[in-house]
Image 1 (tube, rainbow over the protein chains, first blue to last red):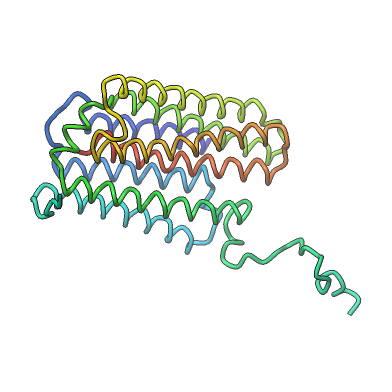
Image 2 (image 1 turned 30 degrees about the vertical axis):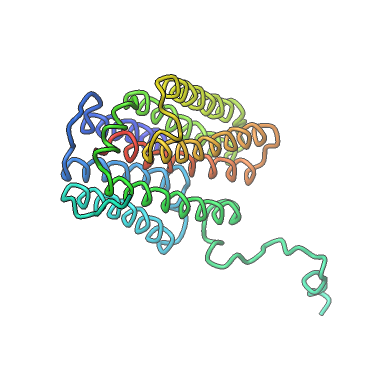
Length: 93
Length: 195
């Protein structure tokens, strides 16, 4: 059944993100792992939209809109992370 | 023309109202307006969090160490399992079966999510980390608190449609619940994992 398969995928992706996020770790994850964690999270969001919210019944334009929006958010967060790693953002007090 | 009488009457509510592009979305178009608005608001919050972290990554990373990442992941599992039950409930209603147990299960897991979140807040506040501690904790409490309010609203909606059944009612409440679920799957790694 599609919904149960989706739920199992969501559980698996949550555990993958937790594994790569090293719950007991203190050190920086690095841009590669952060990209992987964000990718897993966006894929989870796509699964929820597509299968639970039934977006697959909507037109392809709506699907493209939502998936593009998720990609923009993920890219923005990854970009902010990379900027923080490089110290390119000046802290204002 | 005689057939146009209902459409010409100012009091008439057209049965098949034209919602434009929203008409192609599943369920009540009004819930999609809400979903779009909420996703835009939370998207803006996420970007604020990312930018604030970029301005002071050391503060954010040291503050994040005081959160329990495993409890956060457990709450993610609780919420996606609740979403699964809600989706099964909507499917059951659409096929003429009684969805009450599934919707009640989804709502109960929503309450479990809130109980775990409340316990987390209590531990953090007892340790001295409040909304005024620093920028990280201000954003942490605002984002997770705002999300928790949506969980409360979602649980109320699930309970209401478990009693006031009907395909559109159940589909609409479940759509709201999935939106709450969707926001958390982005919020969790952003606040708890990324460092």
